Image 1 (cartoon, helix red, strand yellow):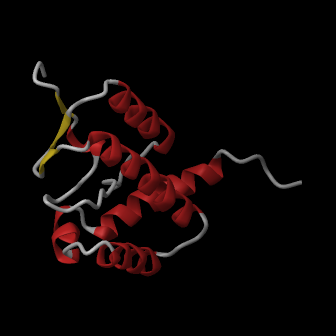
Image 2 (cartoon, rainbow, N blue to C red; image 1 turned 45 degrees about the horizontal axis):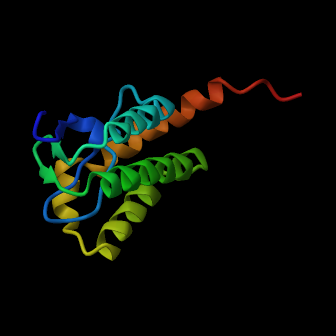
Image 3 (tube, rainbow, N blue to C red; image 1 turned 45 degrees about the vertical axis):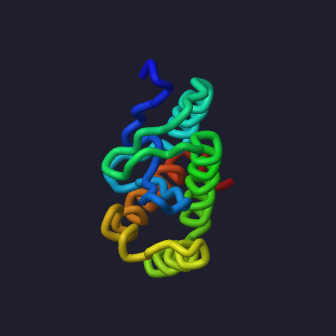
Length: 135
């Protein structure tokens, strides 16, 4: 917008104000980590003054917010790609939220962690389809 606000929707992640934790919404059916990373790059390239987050207010620290989203998305993807199961993933994210001093139940309502896991698990499964057969 002319006032420097970028209306990014889900592409900018979930962050319950006034908290600082940025969660990538990753529910099924389709998730493309590489494309999303490019979208985050494009959002950052525009150098907004603030991000309008769908349902969750306005972030006045867009560079930090997008950097955290990028790192969290990569971290979650690698964790699930490495073989983490649903219970392990949910416990991991709950611990991250708790360590960040965030209200765990609020984030779990905003983006249910089991749904996030299932979207990532489906993505990870498709990554295996792209690998060449073992020799």
